Image (cartoon, rainbow, N blue to C red; front, side, top):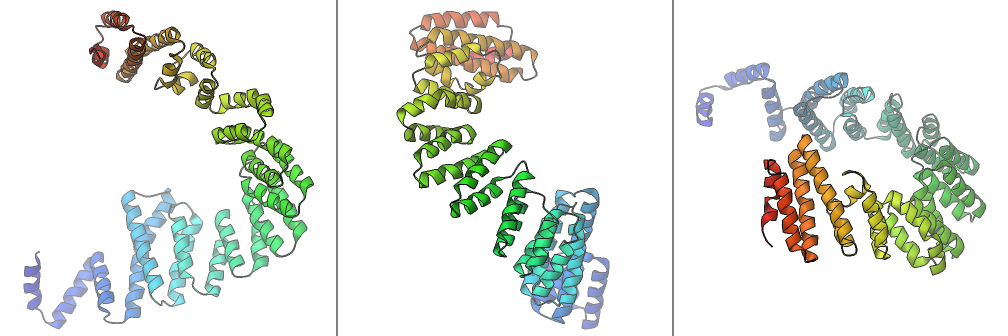
Amino acid sequence: MDAKTTQKLIDNLNKKQLSQLIKELVKRNEKAEQVLLDFCQQQETGDQAFVLEKQLRAHWKKAENIIASANQYGGCSYQDEDIAYTELNKIDYLVQNNEIPWKLRKEIFEAMIYQVNLDNSGFTDYLEEIAFDFCQSEDEQEYLAQLLEKSRSSYYRKQAAEIYKALGKREQSMKLLSENLEYANDYVVLAKQLAAKGEKEAALKTAWEGVEKNKFGLDGVYTYLFHWYEKENDEENLSLLYKRALEKESNLETITKLMYDHYKKKNDIPKKNAMLIEMVKCAKNIRYWYRLCREELPTEKFKKYEPELLKVIYVKDYPFYLDLCFERGNAKAVLQEMQASQSLYDRWSLADNTHHYSLLLAQSYPDEVLDSLWREVNAYVATGANGHSYKKNYGLAAQSLATVKKIMKSQNKSAAWETQFHNFCETHRRKRSLMAAVKFLQKNE
């Protein structure tokens, strides 16, 4: 119905009839109820406390139905998810921008925490965020902590410990943390609280337990213990910490970098250099640390360790290994890698997928590279003829042929290229998709 018609109908109704109409619309349509509540809130008409209560209950009812179902079935549709988040955002806005009695906030807040504790809906984290907004006084925040403390999830129990800490209830916080030590960083959190309380030995013991009882995620506990011992200038325990990290073979990059920086700051050159070499072995950014080794190590020491470092680089960053071979004038080593390749999907083929290394190598070993590329072409053609992705493989064969053409022309072997390419096309002339893929190579450039 258009606005003009609606207005004409309304004009003929008295106040009592309009009231009756609104009641009927609200009774028959849930959306109409929400429109009425929004209108009353915007116009600031009627009992605003009553309107706010109805708003909150209406928004939570819509969200709760979706969240409860999601908790039961482990999720919901994208459409329902959008609806639920929209309703939760409206709730959060109303709570943050209006004075709402604790009794009403507590009722909805408890219903939220109930859904949080089921922890199977996908809405849990956002519900917890909103729950924090619901709890405005310290007593209310403590009540939130008490509810989270009962959660099946250790994550939320640890959140409760953080709330207790913020409220100055350190003993409750530490007790809850000690009962929920799960990851290495949990031990760090507890150790920091113990240290702040003045219990140094207990803090160190807790941090070391984090090292011993965990295999992964040790960055935080290594860092905590390192800075503790560094501050006290305790070289013996710094060495002990590093030794234990080596034994555990976990998060070595973090502790090795800390030790490198420590020895560099102390100007202990031999130990700093030792850590620098170890960084190449354990760091993700192996290229940076290799080049830093080359800059900082004495020439003779670098030459001594370079073969060992290259073995590490060969395993961890094969393309960088090939780059270094060219950089060091050792193209023969790259040739050996190319000739050892037995597959279209081995490490050489993957590293040379754009033929970057083949083109560099062709400057010194053109015939060997051409032989390798022709093997590659034939392998792609054979695979393409038998595989589902034959068009893709034919395209890759064409790319390899283009590299062959480029190398042969640079070697002034254009006539030989034309002959070989003609023979190739004659051999495979019945493969129409292949012929279409290599058609562009027929042009004389």
